[in-house]
Amino acid sequence: MLTKPEIAELGKIIDAAERPFVFFHDDPDGLASFLLLYRKIQVGKGYPLKAAPQLTMDYARLTADYGADTVIILDIAMADQDFLDALHLPTVWVDHHQLQKPKNVLYLNPQVRKKNIPTPALLWPLARKEDLWIATVGCVGDWHVPSFAKECKKQYPYLFGKKMTVQDLLFNSNLGILARVFSFCLKGSTSDVNTNVKIFTRIQDPKEILEQTTPQGKYIWRYYSKINVHYEKLREEALKSVKDDPLLVFTYGDDKLSLTKDLANELLALHPDKIIVLGRRKSGEVRCSLRSGPKINVRDKLMNALTKVDGRGGGHEQACGCAIKEDDFERFLDELR
Image 1 (spheres, rainbow, N blue to C red):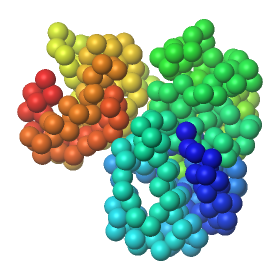
Image 2 (cartoon, rainbow, N blue to C red; image 1 turned 45 degrees about the vertical axis):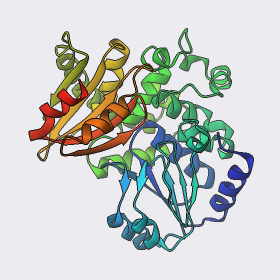
Image 3 (tube, helix red, strand yellow; image 1 turned 90 degrees about the horizontal axis):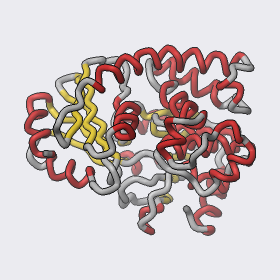
């Protein structure tokens, strides 16, 4: 978690912002982080980062075009210093990936205390109490059972299954369904994603989605269901790739939907003894999500393999991503093995 002084400093910046521009990662914990913030202050513009989780100089103009008075970065692993320097605005960056050393920003990351806690949990002390379900969905979607999960279960018992392990919450509970709804509603065109995010800011209760009790909930559920059809087909194909190999490797060529993170998580739950390599072929690259069980630091394996091939990547110890040139992909797999 963040320290009390860090929370206080973050709170001052948020309270002072009148036109904040919020960059957030396009995954469940990134979306949850944005929702917690926006629903608290009710002002600003959110921008889900749909490419590699790195802010480069190209993104700086967006804040100027909006007329932002503050920049907030949530759950994004990397930001170039020239991007940060070009903002000329009060900037706060809240994250839980590998430590960076940015200058001239308020950088809050529990990794400095060797703790890996998802961004929604870091923001929770400043959030509205009625948004507890959002914070919990975001954390579970990032394979983390937060300290406030029991409190959430008291308020929303129907969201939980019999067990409180992250695997059971993800794959055997309504919390897991909501985590997938969050994820799938960030897939597709920029226009569709922006519409979905706007609708999420107006949903007050998880039953609106799970039971489709409001027009907003019905819209989100229809969109999720449409993406889920593609996911189920992909899952069926991926399960055919299981072999007597320390790696479970599956690649596909859909250039419109990136479902690798979601499918990699489920395949790891089904095959916890393997390193999962899920790749989407696009623009001459294989863009991969990698997963491993707690006994293997797949990030270290990845970073070592990247020294031998043409590619880039990073992430957490058991969950990371990379982009490898297609011509180097087989060599990359050999290096991992």
